[in-house]
Image (cartoon, rainbow, N blue to C red; front, side, top):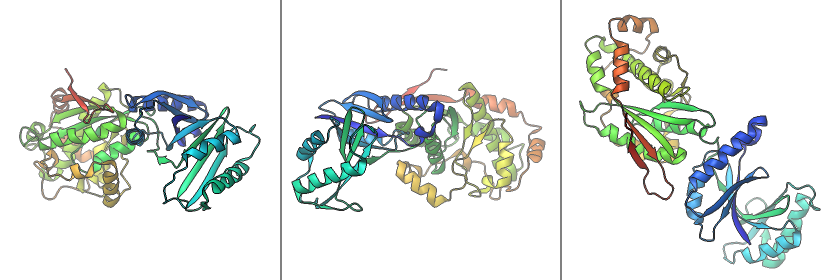
Length: 401
């Protein structure tokens, strides 16, 4: 009996004429994520992604990797059988668990091949009667101890017991490339994850205070990226030394306006990097009203510094919701470790909450903003991070510039 993984998708099925492109991207993502884990081939058949397994394939390891592939709605360890009711019964019998915890079961059948002589309810009744006679278990369609799934497709039947939930969303790269402003805090890693889930490939930019302050935030962000790299496998990080630029701004900018000016300069630097990388948008972890720089007026003023779209996946989420998702994706414990971020450097006690683009243009008129932007881009350290499924930690490489 042949063992394989049957992975299904939901949103991709709604893509109309573009659907083949999304399906190819999903197959490629699964191939990359499971390389070296005993997968002989990855195929797209009958609106499913099939992973044909070698005898030594590690199901537990595969489960962990497939849960991190965007585009997969759910997946199951399955057995391929002939599309014949007698063969299915023969295949089910030796696979039924003998554990005493199973007292009830349910059979779920789907018939994608309409030439099969029985309907889905008829298949369920036939197989249910067979299992009940074979085991003596009771039937419980709502809360069964064991769920038996049978899918009839042209030329085959897939038998599985339960299923695992996938990450959902869209495969990496199908929505283009974006640049995410990644801090060492809770919010921006979650924002990056959420935009990855929408199929965007994310390039990261971090503004740090080294050498004016210790390089804790810089090291922390690299550790956060090692977690996020699991979801898109290949990532690039720009580390921008921002403290020297802040030191050049403090003499020219009134204290109340410094945070907004800092953020506007960050957006300009991130946009310049995005243009170099052929990215189409910027991404931030901003949530409306969370801090002084994230009032509606300040968000508009800061965004006015760039001509590129700014995506804010967390804009309507509160802190508790963001923390919950941070825990789920594994970044929370690292994000709450104390650091010295450049955002806390040279910041007044009472920053402005209702700035306007016109005010900022007046303040910035006497500052060489373009020169500061170019300095930020030119002094950035660039690192590529590649996650290899069999490695315990991602591989980090310094990029020669």
